[in-house]
Length: 92
Image (cartoon, rainbow, N blue to C red; front, top):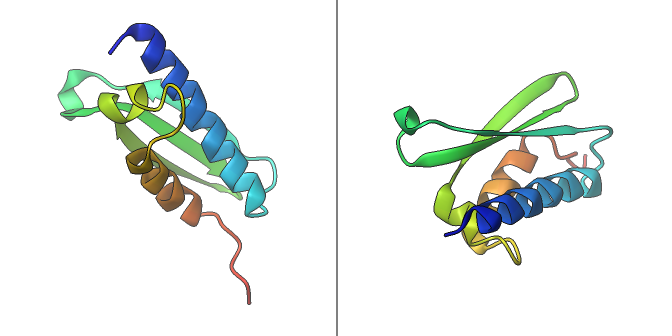
């Protein structure tokens, strides 16, 4: 894994989260990214979504991020769906 792969993967994941939120009708979401220290174990980055009066965070491993440098990999997509699920509009 290179630093460039990590940066590109982070940007791709951040865009994918934002795109999924908007596709589910979430207005004006804020998606923030922060690198984590080794104290948190294997998780190397955290993406936090703030929308609709709440914030929800999801950790991603460095492998999930670096492997997403070209396209977001399935393991990261699963975490994105979980994160977006906290905000997605339900048909009712």
